[in-house]
Structures are given as C-alpha cells and as structure tokens.
Length: 211
Ligand code: PGA
Image 1: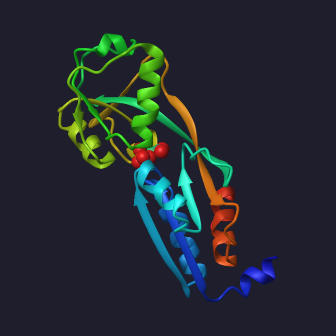
Image 2 (image 1 turned 180 degrees about the vertical axis):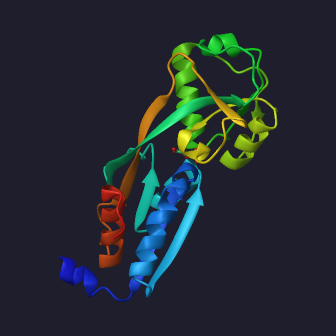
Image 3 (image 1 turned 60 degrees about the vertical axis):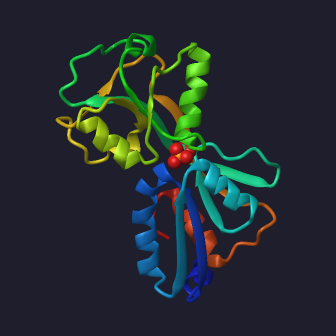
C-alpha cells in the first residue's frame, strides 16, 4: 500500500467541505500537496446545502460534512468532534450559566438557512421550544465572529471557528444544552471509484495526519 502511494505522482483530488471544516482541512491539504506536488487539487467550500448539491451531482471525490445527507449511496465516517457553542463579546456582562430562554432579549446573529450550523441550531430550538427574537442573518462564520467581537450581538458557532481568538474578543457562555455536539465526517459516494490520491487524502483526514 505504502509503495503504491509513493508511486502516486500525478492525478487529481477534488475536495468539497462545509464552511466550518475549512479550519481543519488546509493544514492536512498543505502537507498532502507538499508530499505529492504533482497532484492537481480542487478545494471547494460552501454551506451544507451547496455541498450536498455537489455530492448529489457527483462532482467531487471527497466531502466533509458534520451532518451527512441521508442517502443510501453515501458512505460517511466520523473523524473529529465539532461542537457548537454560544458566544458573546469579550466584555459581555449579561446572563451566563443560563438557558437559551434567559437570552431571549439578546440580538442573535444566525447563519442562513441551508447552513449545517443553522440546521443544528434550529433543531435545538425546536426541542427547547425557543424562538429567536428578530435575529440578524449573516452568511459567513468569520463575519459572525467579528460582528460578535465588535458587540453586535450573540451567536452560535462551531468552536473550530474560534481558533486563535482571544478571550478579550469572544467569550463562550455556559448555556444549558450546549455545546451541541456533532462530528465531522469524511463522506464519499459508494459508486465513485477513488484515485490513489483521493484515497490517501481521505485516510489522512481519518488519521488526522498528513498523507
Ligand atoms: P455550514 O456547515 O457551513 O453549512 O454551517 C457547518 C456544518 O455542517 O458543520
């Protein structure tokens, strides 16, 4: 197997990941590209709905989802925890150690419909019988994080989007039921033959080590 991979000199890897996964894929992709410089890599990032559409159209070799589409053609293997947390500005002095209901008067910045983060949040709210009051929709994790840090409101984001963020800028609130836990999955289509390059990269995700 190792010899076969060492002989892998050319080929292509088409990777498509949901937006939160872009915080984990680049270091592995970078190591992979250095080890296999002649592999032609195409990396697409989108929200859950956009990436699910690409999967349906069989456009890529490997996909990364936290909530893989339910389809018998889909093969999904979990590889890393993905926890969603409630965040506030670093100098926030409102309720903490509370329920979501205690935050009902706060402005929440939510991801758009079609986002996996939003889907997980909506499912939690349905279970908790909670409705956001006049939320603001922002279609980017970074824009939400920066808006929270500048005092625009609170939000629920994957903790991976907070890597290297100072506690002066962002504070994680201790809200009942949070973090919402899920896992990222390496997802492939059972009927799509994978190149050696794609197989090696999928394995590097599962091992969380460079291929
Ligand atoms: P999103 O993906 O960018 O669609 O919110 C996040 C996820 O599914 O974990």
